[in-house]
Amino acid sequence: MVDTIDITTSRRPDARFSYATLQGGALIVVLCLAAPVVSYGLALHSGGAQPALAAAFTFMLCAAGGALTLWGLRKRSLYPHAHLGLCNAITLTRGAGICAIAGQCLAPPADPNWSFAAVALGLLVLDGLDGWAARRARLESPLGAKIDVETDVAFALTLAILAVVLGQVGLWFVALGLLRPAFLILLHLRPRLNQPLPDALWRKRLAAIQMGTQVALVSPLLSPALASLVAALLLGVMVISFARDLLWLARKR
Image 1 (cartoon, rainbow, N blue to C red):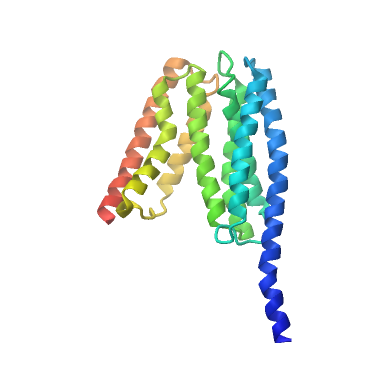
Image 2 (image 1 turned 30 degrees about the horizontal axis):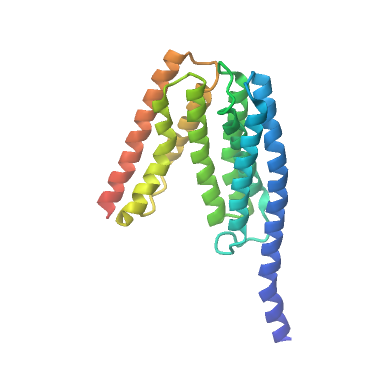
């Protein structure tokens, strides 16, 4: 009887793990089909030059992101849970939506429009739901946290590029989307600085302000002159915040 229990419990994690991977694969297939349709519709509705190019680029991004996610789901150390869960489904959906917006960077309209802002605002709302759903269902995982962070980086970089191609700001504003990757590269090059930062409410609020401001920058709400001023202030504040974190890490070392 003891042997039977040991064998059964050793097999259960593998069965649950495979089921989570299957759920993730099914959702990724759906998102890879739906996101290009949304991208095509956005480009068509906003008067983009090449809707088909936007849809194709969106599909490529979704397929690449989906492949990396499936690889992570197969790693028990990254995702040890039995089910994908609503939290991760929300995060993956948000990633697909970011891919749909990224497609517009290749086929932008002449002027900003409310369609881009509406989709970006919806993605911003989802950003606040996935963490809550993960804690509620107790499905926190290194993979879920990693995907959440990377989608935040992709959101910032995509909206920064879109604001540039829409003529709202200059090319310099792309630096906002590159701050986080540059920060991670610096920590990789300086292992002694690579330590976890303390959880801080101000950092979360600043991230929310950043993403909300970027949504406004791709809408007709701001004129190009005002948008450039707001974007410059936002970039300056974010540079100071990253510099503050680096200074804390250097003192901690």
